[in-house]
Length: 265
Image 1: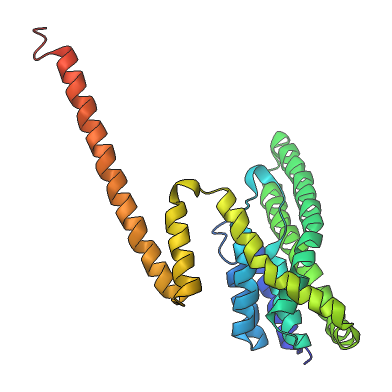
Image 2: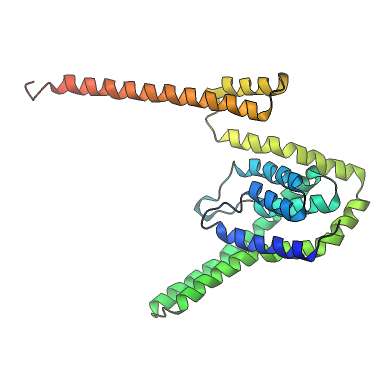
């Protein structure tokens, strides 16, 4: 399969809009959404959801707090989905390619932030000189540069990578292809492990083991395990709420006993 011109254009425009949306809602850059939209454009929604959903698991465990740069799983989801469909090797192959792409795009993220810092200093100078009309242009320039930081690399990879990916995958040795597929299969486990690392898992180990038992030994579908988890969460929430209310009531009684009534003690 080869990329059509309209597919390259749509994916590039989506990348430009999505990365600017990250400053507002941070919805379009979520790997699951990126994979879904890329899959729709490529005509293979299932592959897009598999690639994007797997990278979403990895994305859940990290965040760019304080302006820190993290692997660009958005671009990885887009390109991973596209190359998986082009090569015809399946989602595992796309996931295996998406991870190094995400790490590579991290460097461009740092460069784009550096460019916006330069523009910020120009805004400061414009404020000092009372050049009010210049400020909106500088702010808009920052938005354009931020969008191009993803749109241009993705566009180049789509143009150059179309024939290159097909040629590489057709001549790729089996051991390397199997390695990429194995890495792609391991990525969901890594994502879940990262997520559990930052969650209060220890006190909920029984529920974790119960969900694993239902899924692994009773073959309960994921939706069924999710419903069981929802019920467990509701019970825990109700229990904790009752416990908090009892503590509030106990504290109120202690305060009353200490102070007496109407100040007579």
